[in-house]
Length: 540
Ligand SMILES: Cc1cc2nc3c(=O)[nH]c(=O)nc-3n(C[C@H](O)[C@H](O)[C@H](O)COP(=O)(O)OP(=O)(O)OC[C@H]3O[C@@H](n4cnc5c(N)ncnc54)[C@H](O)[C@@H]3O)c2cc1C
Image (cartoon, rainbow, N blue to C red; front, side, top):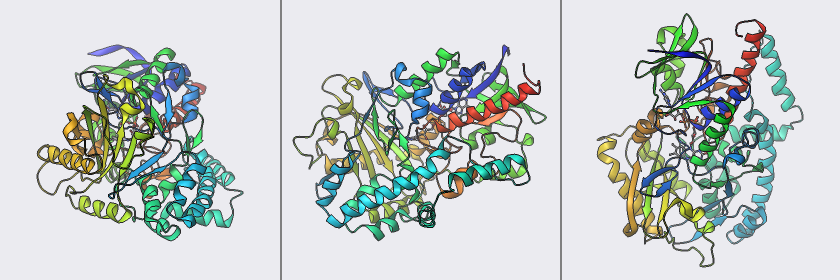
């Protein structure tokens, strides 16, 4: 069956980036249809009910880098988006029962660090200033396409000029530091600059998140800069926020904003194929056989899913396909969500803490532990001892559960996508048991208060949320897969090798996380091309 309406643009996938792109396109007057395979919008930025009346951010759980421009342009506040800063921004629960906060306010954080090392507290101030300064060089690139420096073309020269202009006032010292952060390891940086294991571990808890690599792997220091890009409605450097109503409030607000601008959204509408002919996009074909025509298609699915599953390989250059197959995915993390009959009581939490201060705990003892944990997972084993990030969401927002109950969401790394022995279906509960045991060492009342437990292995992230190999960023965030190398070299400006086909998800620059930046940037690129097509009379 062929649908009678032809759209200007179809967006495949209603993740937060797909919804962002769609809203910008509709705002510019393009008739836009979003097709989502799941029954709900949001991709991996959702709030779901895991037991009657108990809702939780099943996948992503902290908003840190959602672009202020996207929040403002699409007026997400008017559509119900409200975030409360995490304070402490980070809080580590150590094996000896100590709970150490990293307060959001710098002076308060420094005072806390002083308890562990006066020297480190002073170093922190110096390094924080330096990192914030360096992060400002990178910040402007976040919301624009990476340069494609092709000196044979006018555009290439313009891109070269754009990059040069950004760095024209950089000093030798800053350049050296920037290269160090881009290529060095987090572990070596911390060992070189700090003496306290406690303070180093606080930095660790804030970095290499969801990354395929231990903290001593080259390229892991970049997270120190990445996390200092500004985020949240107030544009705060290093912002961390709890979203009221869970992360799904972000995508609900994006969907509502888009619909007000004219975006049509269809859920339970899996796209089987992106229809292309002679190097040009024609629309999509749904799994039920429905054909829908459009002048443009933007895929919010990851690059492997898009090009290895939805596009006819004979329409793509061999080199491009080869590069897509080579993208490093293999998600190294999992999620465990629980409904509890009482609030988790983490040992060492001061009695005077407010509920918000009792919300976010990271269980990771040291850099060495994290490196060893990764080493075990890298060879296909599920580590006995895991790194677990715990958020007691109901302490930040009690509307998520009926009175008296609590929801705890736990991000777990490192685990392998490919198991050496057995399958994830056979090992799901083993993973859940290990996570609960680890939490029980720090919050002893948790194991006996679990009413519901949902374990999402890397395989479940793939099956349920459509993330190839369970990679939460649509491709690992490693230097050779960033900037003009993302998704693959030569194709970083959202246009793909088929006329009218674009990528708009986390697999493109600047990468994963709930930022809205790939969706925003892709839409801007589409609109530039649309204008050009109009000028040439190719579209009405
Ligand atoms: C467990 C987990 C924890 C995370 N924690 C955080 C966090 O705390 N903070 C943070 O900032 N980031 C976090 N992230 C990362 C972040 O959520 C993602 O990088 C980001 O949401 C990706 O957004 P996206 O819109 O690009 O893609 P997605 O959210 O993956 O959306 C893609 C959409 O496309 C749909 N789709 C795919 N194929 C088809 C098809 N054939 N037809 C129709 N639809 C299709 C999918 O169903 C999905 O809805 C986490 C991710 C996970 C999985």
